[in-house]
Length: 365
Image (cartoon, rainbow, N blue to C red; front, side, top):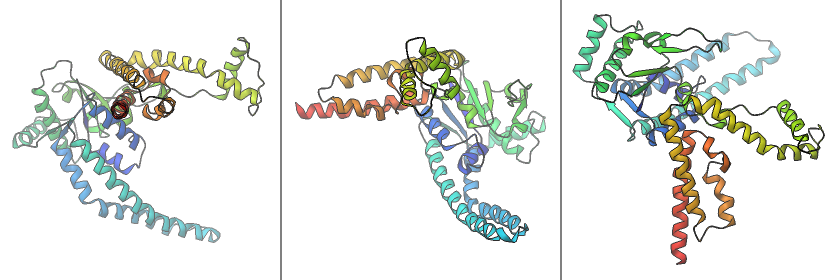
């Protein structure tokens, strides 16, 4: 079973959209995975309270930060010939502040709905947790040194109490927090130069096997499909065209020519085959066995739903034409290689499409 703890700073970054790694699209994928029982969100009440406090002071905090930014720009001397641009920037900042507040509130509503969903488990903040957190700090069991380490210690004790009742030895906790200085240790740098972290040993000993992430993007890296593979470049297409010549295709290398466009179209099947092979070797093999099994079950369910749809009396050419929007505009032969969240969305969508055609068939009977 996979559990996910997502710290307050990650939710705030998702609301602010101020830095990459917690984009709105990632929230949508997270919501689908939680609804599909792939992940269970574990929410200590400390996080809910911190989010409430953040929203209570939102307008004041953002206004103050934007005023600080405007003050810096106002005091900056510029060439007189671009003074109008400086004034325009200052006016734009007022509009941007209003837009950010609106988007922040909208995203908070979506996050609140997610936290209230059936896929989320809430851990109340109790006197026992507060007492255990204080003891944890006194005995030096919490490695954090930030000013909020008492709240962070309460988060850890909330998770410890919750997982003490979970008897599944195969449980895995996805721990996501930008506050790596308090919760994690940095691992040895790799050739990719990406920073990698692990939950601090003092904390890991009291919790199930954990994976540490500093962004939603990292946490959801397991939910990758063929879409995550880089698209072919012009150079790769030209190389593929050269290979295609061996199959009897004749085309010129003029990128605007009709011959080139026809050649690219003819090569789509070869390119899809290549991407399927890359997905199986680069992505799928890295996926845990139980998630691969989940994918296989979903693909089978989708194929059965497609078969049942096409057997409906009401199914016609128009139904086939509209099918792409019901399968997330993913080519049907690439469905087995799309992301887990897409598979969950496609299955839900096809169930609805099938029910529509069943209703149409019933009316004809």
